[in-house]
Amino acid sequence: MSYLVYFQAWNYYGIVRYLYSLVDRNILIMRGANQTIIRDMQILKSQTVLTSVSKVECYVCGKGLQDGHSITAKTLPNGIVLFCDVHYSLQSNDC
Image (cartoon, rainbow, N blue to C red):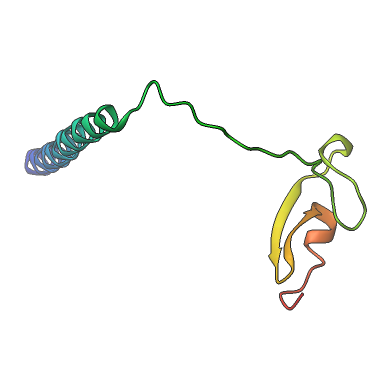
Protein backbone atom coordinates (compact mmCIF):
# COMPACT_ATOMS: atom_id res chain seq x y z
CA MET A 1 0.00 0.00 0.00
CA SER A 2 2.84 2.41 0.72
CA TYR A 3 4.14 1.95 -2.85
CA LEU A 4 0.76 3.11 -4.18
CA VAL A 5 0.80 6.17 -1.94
CA TYR A 6 4.38 6.93 -3.04
CA PHE A 7 3.36 6.55 -6.70
CA GLN A 8 0.36 8.86 -6.27
CA ALA A 9 2.50 11.45 -4.49
CA TRP A 10 5.10 11.29 -7.26
CA ASN A 11 2.35 11.62 -9.86
CA TYR A 12 0.92 14.69 -8.10
CA TYR A 13 4.42 16.15 -7.87
CA GLY A 14 4.80 15.77 -11.63
CA ILE A 15 1.45 17.42 -12.28
CA VAL A 16 2.29 20.32 -9.98
CA ARG A 17 5.69 20.82 -11.66
CA TYR A 18 3.98 20.81 -15.06
CA LEU A 19 1.42 23.41 -13.92
CA TYR A 20 4.19 25.61 -12.50
CA SER A 21 6.02 25.43 -15.84
CA LEU A 22 2.85 26.58 -17.61
CA VAL A 23 2.46 29.48 -15.19
CA ASP A 24 6.10 30.50 -15.63
CA ARG A 25 5.76 30.41 -19.41
CA ASN A 26 2.55 32.50 -19.28
CA ILE A 27 4.23 35.05 -17.01
CA LEU A 28 7.01 35.49 -19.57
CA ILE A 29 4.47 35.80 -22.39
CA MET A 30 2.46 38.39 -20.43
CA ARG A 31 5.59 40.43 -19.69
CA GLY A 32 6.27 40.60 -23.41
CA ALA A 33 2.64 41.49 -24.15
CA ASN A 34 2.66 44.24 -21.50
CA GLN A 35 5.82 45.73 -22.98
CA THR A 36 4.24 45.68 -26.44
CA ILE A 37 1.07 47.35 -25.15
CA ILE A 38 3.05 50.06 -23.38
CA ARG A 39 5.23 50.64 -26.44
CA ASP A 40 2.23 50.88 -28.78
CA MET A 41 0.08 53.01 -26.48
CA GLN A 42 -0.67 56.50 -27.73
CA ILE A 43 -2.04 58.46 -24.79
CA LEU A 44 -2.53 61.85 -26.44
CA LYS A 45 -4.17 60.62 -29.65
CA SER A 46 -7.93 61.00 -29.62
CA GLN A 47 -10.08 58.60 -31.60
CA THR A 48 -13.71 58.72 -32.63
CA VAL A 49 -15.70 55.61 -31.83
CA LEU A 50 -18.95 54.98 -33.66
CA THR A 51 -21.52 52.72 -32.04
CA SER A 52 -25.12 51.77 -32.64
CA VAL A 53 -27.79 50.21 -30.46
CA SER A 54 -30.93 48.37 -31.43
CA LYS A 55 -33.72 46.80 -29.45
CA VAL A 56 -33.21 43.07 -28.84
CA GLU A 57 -36.40 41.36 -29.94
CA CYS A 58 -37.49 38.35 -31.96
CA TYR A 59 -37.77 38.95 -35.71
CA VAL A 60 -40.93 36.80 -35.84
CA CYS A 61 -43.01 37.73 -32.78
CA GLY A 62 -41.31 40.88 -31.44
CA LYS A 63 -40.89 39.51 -27.93
CA GLY A 64 -37.64 40.12 -26.09
CA LEU A 65 -35.78 39.88 -22.83
CA GLN A 66 -38.35 42.01 -21.01
CA ASP A 67 -40.95 39.35 -21.86
CA GLY A 68 -38.88 36.57 -20.31
CA HIS A 69 -37.51 35.10 -23.55
CA SER A 70 -33.90 34.42 -24.41
CA ILE A 71 -32.73 35.91 -27.71
CA THR A 72 -30.33 34.19 -30.13
CA ALA A 73 -28.75 35.65 -33.26
CA LYS A 74 -28.65 33.56 -36.42
CA THR A 75 -26.68 34.48 -39.52
CA LEU A 76 -28.76 34.09 -42.66
CA PRO A 77 -27.76 34.87 -46.26
CA ASN A 78 -29.43 38.30 -46.02
CA GLY A 79 -27.88 39.22 -42.64
CA ILE A 80 -28.10 38.55 -38.92
CA VAL A 81 -31.58 37.89 -37.52
CA LEU A 82 -32.63 37.66 -33.87
CA PHE A 83 -34.98 34.90 -32.71
CA CYS A 84 -36.59 34.16 -29.35
CA ASP A 85 -36.17 30.73 -27.78
CA VAL A 86 -39.50 29.57 -29.28
CA HIS A 87 -38.85 30.58 -32.89
CA TYR A 88 -35.14 29.74 -32.99
CA SER A 89 -35.92 26.06 -32.44
CA LEU A 90 -38.38 26.16 -35.39
CA GLN A 91 -35.76 27.46 -37.85
CA SER A 92 -34.32 25.02 -40.37
CA ASN A 93 -30.74 25.12 -41.59
CA ASP A 94 -31.79 26.01 -45.14
CA CYS A 95 -33.31 29.43 -44.31
